[in-house]
Structures are given as structure tokens and as C-alpha cells.
Length: 100
Image 1 (cartoon, rainbow, N blue to C red):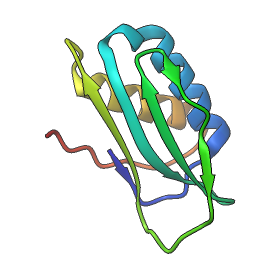
Image 2: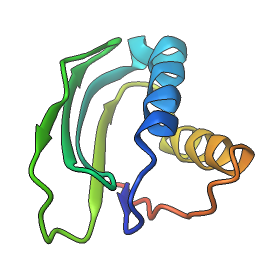
Image 3: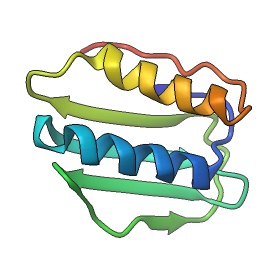
């Protein structure tokens, strides 16, 4: 998934916690670079575990990117869960999803 908008880190972390609790056994790897208002945050995880995020200096990078390696899980379920939570929180945005 790619996001042009800066991400609300609290909402994103809440969503990621829910996602990994529910589907962690089917999410083999999580990697990403998330742009917030304050910093860029590098994510790296294996199944239910996300290693401590690395806070990087803000860059001119325009996109946040999030990649999952999945087993027996429809990527659309991840996309739908993220957009549903953000919409419920009043955060209007629409990430792009590509399958590869």
C-alpha cells in the first residue's frame, strides 16, 4: 500500500495492533516506511511481532509505503480494515493498494 497523506501515528499504530492480533499468524512479514507530521518511521515485523520502530529524520519522500507478505489472507481485507478504521476516526484518506 502507498499513502500520499501524512499518517496519524496513533491511529495507525492502533490499527496495526488490531490487525496483528487478528491475523498475525497469516502475516508472515511487515515492512514499511510511514510518514507522520513529525518524522518518518521505519517498520519491520514478523507475524505478531513488530520490532521497535526506527524514527528517521523527515525527508522529502512523498509516499509512505507498507508491504505485507501474507499466507492465506486476502490483501483486500487489510486494505478494507485500514480504510474502515480511519473513516470511523474521521480521518479521510484513500491509500493505493497494489498486488505483487
